[in-house]
Length: 113
Image (cartoon, rainbow, N blue to C red; front, side):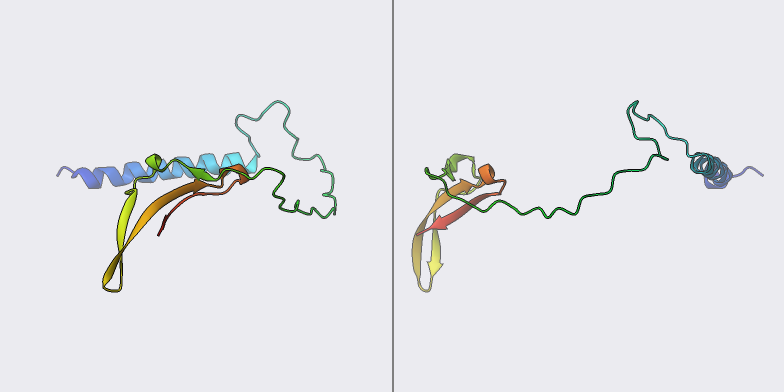
């Protein structure tokens, strides 16, 4: 009787697992490194201890000229103006977009009335 597809596949997958496990064990036992850079630090070399210096972040200063954080609204995928419900009335609002990218921060957008 012929074996079906899955019944033929199971022994092949078991053999593949055994082969991969054998390769993993050989690599780990003999500490084989693949594609090691030429100037890499050898495994047995001792490293310098890390200094105990306390790194203090620089204080936030504004400087003489203010930073420009507002950006063009055309890049934002929201309508430039919208009406928001305020009780029983509608409040007209305008989209303002900006970016704190100069300080490593996020972009933002919000509606102002």
